[in-house]
Image 1 (cartoon, one colour):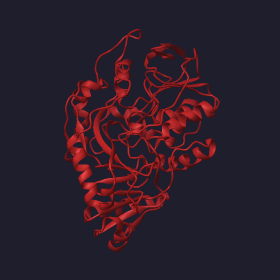
Image 2 (cartoon, helix red, strand yellow; image 1 turned 120 degrees about the vertical axis):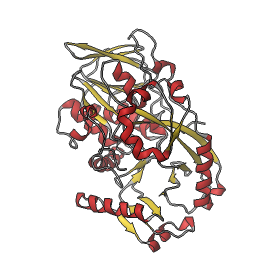
Image 3 (cartoon, helix red, strand yellow; image 1 turned 180 degrees about the vertical axis):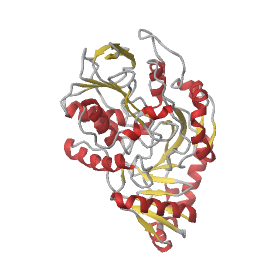
Image 4 (cartoon, one colour; image 1 turned 90 degrees about the vertical axis):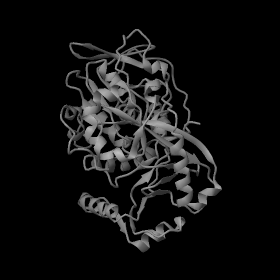
Amino acid sequence: MPAPLTLLETSSNLPDHADAVVIGGGIIGAFAAYYLTRRGLKTVLIEKGRIGAEQSSRNWGWCRQQNRDARELPVSTKSLDLWERFQEETGEETGFRRCGLLYLSNNEEEIAGWARWRDFAKPLGVTTHMLSSAEAAERGYATGKSWKGGVFSPTDGIADPARAAPAVARAIIKCGGTVIQNCAARGIETEGGRVSAVVTEHGTIRTKAAVLAGGAWASSFCRQLGIRFPQASIRSTALSVSAEAEGLPDTLHTSGITVTRRGDGGFTLAISGRGRVDVTPQQIRFAPQFLPMFFKRWRNLAPGGLEGIRGGHETLSRWKLDEKTPMERMRILDPKPDAATVRLTHQRALELLPELSKTKIQAVWAGFIDTTPDGVPGIGEISTVPGFILAAGFSGHGFGVGPGAGHLIADIVTGEEPLVDPKPYHPDRFNNSAWGKVADF
């Protein structure tokens, strides 16, 4: 069964013009369209399948500052405030709450790394509590184990992946924006080198601003415009269990397993960083740029199969604007979960938290995490196609920073003072090597 998702009914009437068109109805695209709509722009959000149906509903739901790379920390901090503000502004429920995130470890080197991050983040206003052995055992009482130490970040939290993107889409509609599902964007038209329209399978929308928040599909879409965007997808597997377990922390991360309480009271179980690399033409094309990432993360990666080919999202083919595209043949990327990872994840969770033996597996799923060579997203206007703003490659961090990223995208489109410094995210950096620049966390 795929990851749970709140289904949403939306319009099927395609406007003939808009101030801005956002392509991709995941958490990034939804928040970008929300902030554009709130600023009075006639905004259209188009999604080839269902709102939030790909990675935005398949992640853990963590909204964190803790252990963020220095380049992502500012937008992470802003995002936490915006998650709260969104619910106050709209009355829509995303499941966000600052429950705190708990990390436990018996590895002294890992604990020392968390302490170094605490020292780095403290001057920036981030609150992190390092835990002694006794404090770690107390907070991790449900494990029944002793720990050398840990860390607790009280101002971080979680939101519900099943509800969040659909909730933002409903807010867009309330604010007067348009959301259209089952409508794939085929490409961009230009006049004088600038964006003039977005061509969809159901017609053309005239616009001067197009935001591509296409997740794992972004690179192949960019290729149609002659834009080189190095991107590779990792197939990650997770599962959820039912709500019978009592007395467990809302969140718990160890090197072996990560456990997160879901909105229905059950838990999402996953192994951090573990994934399959499904070889595709795009993977091969960009392999040299991903060598720094591979050398840093190879211990958690394993060879995959043909799921990437089957998905069609990493094709090197080009298509005409009047013909069916790979996005229309694969409305929702729903790759096959890795059975070995499912068994290992469940086993580790039961060993760590015996109370979970009272639960049953509810759902098992996989998703494609779109990564960049340095593990930091690409956000910015493409200089060769003015009016075209790329927002992709969030490398497994997109859900938590969704509000901040969406706000920053709206800032770029409207020319307003940016929420955070946009320079570290600009796609132009992919013209250079990622050696020595791969994100630490």
